[in-house]
Image 1 (cartoon, protein in one colour):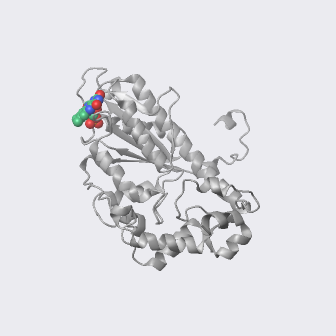
Image 2 (cartoon, rainbow, N blue to C red):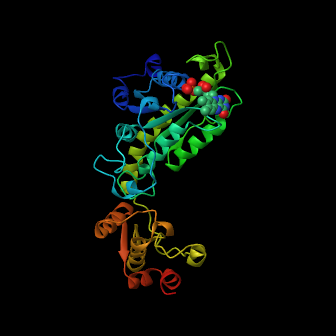
Amino acid sequence: MLLCRHGLSGPDFGRNAIMAKSIKILGICGSHRTEQNSYYALRRCLEGISTLGIPVETELVDISRMKIEDCKGCHVCFLRSGQGSFCPVIHDDMDAVYPKMIEADGIIVSSPVHWWSSTSKLRRFIDRCNTFCGSGNTEYAGAMYNKAGGIITVAYDIHGGTEVAATHLATWMLTLNMAVVGTQTAHIAGTAATNLGVPTAGPDSVKFDYHGMKTVYEVGRRVAETAYLLKYGRESLRDLQAVHPEPAVRGVKIDWKKFYQYENSFPKEHYGVEGQLATSENAFNIFIDEMTHRKKSEGNTWGVLGNIDQFKEDWLVKRGLKLLSDDEIYSLCPEYYDFFLAR
Ligand SMILES: Cc1cc2nc3c(=O)[nH]c(=O)nc-3n(C[C@H](O)[C@H](O)[C@H](O)COP(=O)(O)O)c2cc1C
C-alpha cells in the first residue's frame, strides 16, 4: 500500500509473490473451563493477528474438552515415534493436536493462572509434547525448532502470578528451541486479570483489563511477525548454508583436556572432519553397549532398545555423524586420541 501511495508500484512490485507467502499460527487454550477468559483473550489475540496485513491462517485449539492422559515418562517417544504416531504408547485427543503443532509456524499458548502456575491440564499437555524434545532420536525430535512462541496468562488478580506462570511456559518453549517473543511494554507475555471491572466473574471479564489486553494483542503481533521472518528467513538461510557448508574444525588447536574435564566417556563430543561431524567408532560402540545394558534405575532414559543396528544407523544419520577408526582420529587430532581414547 505504501508503495502504491508513492506511485512506485510498477506491475505490483512483487506484492503478489509476497502475498503468496503465508503463515499458520496455532493458539492453544489451557483452561479447564470452556470458552472463558483465557479463551476470550486468545481468540481476540488471534483475531488481532488477522488485521496485520500478514497473510495468516489461525486456528484455536481448546483443550478444555479434550481427553489428555498423563505422560508415563517411558521415553518410548524418543525412540519409536514416527509415521504419524507421536506418542506410540497413549492414543487420545493429543493425536489430533501434534500434526497441527508441526504445521504451525507460530504457537500461542493461553493459560489461566492456577496457584501462580499454568493449569494442571496444560501441564499434562506440555508433558505429552516430550516427543518434540531435541534429545529424542526420531524425526519429531526438535520439530519445534525456530517456530515463534507467545504466551498469554490470565489471573483473577493483577498481582496474582501471571508473570510467574508465563515464565514457566516460556522456559518450556525455549527448551523446545522456539523463539519466544516478549512485548513492547516490558511484559514477558500477554498478562491480564479478570477482576478489574464489573462483572468480575463473567466469561469475558478480562476485556476490562485494557492494559492487559493490549499486551495480549502485542504478543499476537510479535508472534506473527517473528513467525513470518523465521519461516521465510529460514528458507534463505538454508540456501546460503547449502552453498557454504559449516567449516571444519580441522587444524584448530583444541584443549581437549579442559573440554573433557567434566565429561564422562560417552561419545557425545564430536570431532569436525572436513566439514562433517565425526566420532570414534570404538567409543560409539561402548556407548551403545552401555545404553543397551543399563537399567532404568541406573539412568537409562532410552528404555529398551529394539533393533540395535537400526538404532545405531538412525543415531548417526540424524546427527550427520561419520564414524572414524582410532588410527584416523590419531592422524587428525592426537590430543583427542591421547586424552579421550588411550587412557
Ligand atoms: C485452582 C485455581 C487456582 C487459581 N489460582 C490463582 C492464582 O494463583 N492467582 C490468581 O490471581 N487467580 C487464580 N485463580 C483464578 C483464575 O486465574 C481466574 O479465574 C482465571 O480467569 C481463570 O481463567 P478462565 O476464565 O479462562 O478459566 C485460580 C483459579 C483456580 C480454579
